Length: 139
Image (cartoon, rainbow, N blue to C red; front, side, top):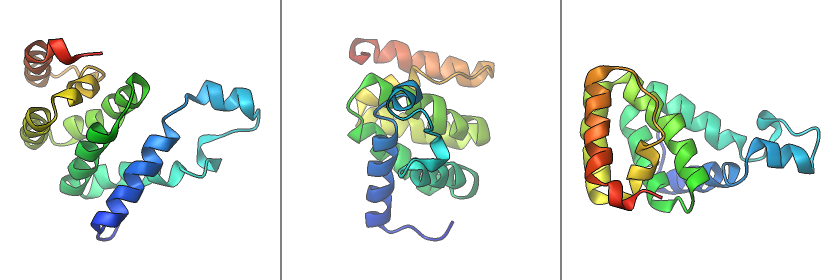
């Protein structure tokens, strides 16, 4: 994936959040032939998956902005179980630094952290510390 401008990042975030505002089951209930890859906002989900693999720094910018723009539990859950978890699995030490900065700047991001599933004991310990520290902000 090539260089993304600030405008590109904002468009990606808006489309990614729009895609995740309703569950797949809700989308299927409205359109029985719905499939993720046919959704007009799927490009943003795919683009962020590519960024996680190819450009960690930009992926963190996107995830940070996603957490700032998220409005509900479903969005936070998809951020945590999706790109945030993938970043922590891919580059744990670097990602923990980004994560600390993100949560310090936007404590509501703890709602995404709460949805990360990771087994590595050192990463889990760090996540649990953050979850305890910001417990009062969890939805």
